[in-house]
Length: 161
Image (cartoon, rainbow, N blue to C red; front, side, top):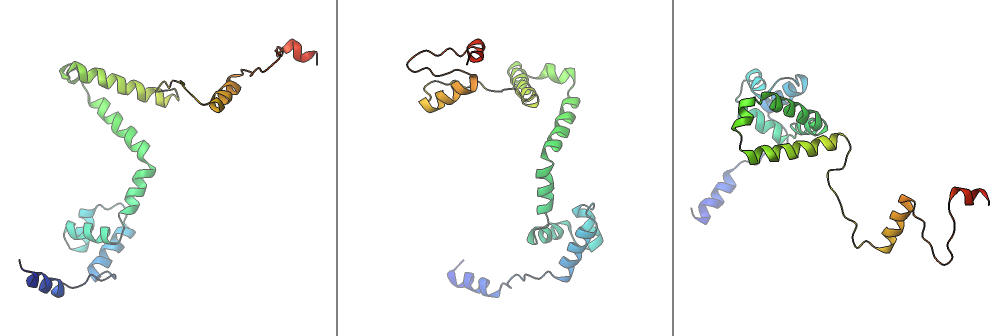
């Protein structure tokens, strides 16, 4: 392909219009007025192919609501898929699975169970923390920092004040 043929192609291509064609407008209206229809059904009603429906909806950003809906319901979608997958496993499936995969599955399920119960899923060591962080940590767990004379902080000593 020569540079001249590329230039000719670029010139002869029609620019895309920002306004939808009649067919695209029909697709958009069907999509908005019947949100439960899938793209194949929209194509049948509009009298075009599935690919044209998909291109039209993508061009005008109308699939974004599907993505937003998915994002806002992702936890429930995942829970439903997990339920289906777990229920589809048979004892025979589990026995066929290599031991290493079974051990990994148990570990992953254990972590997810702990997350669901608001329990820790990791242990973090506090070695080499800054003095400020140590002071904050001590305050949180109730340790008093002692400088100079020792101060009695028992409840009995507080009552005498």
